[in-house]
Length: 460
Image (cartoon, rainbow, N blue to C red; front, side, top):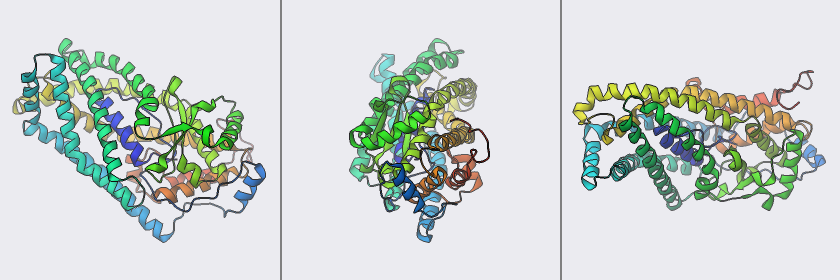
């Protein structure tokens, strides 16, 4: 029910690389929660799909009125989440320092000179220079990635060995170099052909590239990192229950659009998400979710993700990203000229068309995305709250005591994922793409428009 560290790293990878060339337009929806990986608690006993069994299963549970952790888990959640917060801000500062040093030490211009000496063909020059710059950045930042994974192992959030983890990191690097090189070639071609309008033409080129990235991610990129299979192949009883929820919403989500991901091979976290667009659009449920939650709770998780599906959050995010990219490119055009006018001579960068200016573009992009994080995450919290409401409404009347079921699902999520019980207000404002879990649990427990004679917001 949340975007974990493993998946979010790849989402950030695609987002960063494509945004670097202004083409990252929401490659996938983040699942139902908000922070890093987590330790497995005691798996909840799986119930049958009969209504009577659901009733008895929920009746046996104590009322879940607030998010509570044992003293041991509370200490772990605080330590783990705070380490993640520190790592985020340190990583941002470290990334800027890496880019700045690449410029100050003349590494960028050396790569440019090597590429130009190697071939007179512009395509070869761009390929060599972009690949060298991107690989250098990745190599220098590798220690932070290693520390991040060591944290997930220390707090028992990951079961992925170092060999498998490094192979995933290598595949990410290959993807980033391939995509980054293509986008860099397009970017510098635009700059050379239209020094004053390149930002607009590149924006036009970025839109179809972004659509392609969104489309191919679930069918080509995601399977490089995890195993997927039709949910109906291993959990037909769950599919039957899901179909009742889909019918309740008056929707038609074909069985072949619902997938199981074998996340337990690498992670212990609970998760589900919506991804893709058009023919590649799908709902994905992680096997950990099915293992560690009851069937009614899994249906709430699915209902939340179906909310993203039905409310067109990927499409809406794409449209907003297109608008944001246009503004970002226009501002970047002026910022790049300002930066090169001030430091270009020191760095021996001749102008925006110089391949050695790529780290300058990446540096400006990093600062802009960092400063825009509160806005981007605020919109994410808005969509996640909408999906929570939709999930509650769509299982109402199907799952007995649905508010308690949803609240307990959040409790299980928090225990397994070590969600911060009380994140600092600034951290929630700046970093959280989902509302804090404690707030979501209380909302789920108290949301009841039906008893108040009010009309539900989405599922009438």
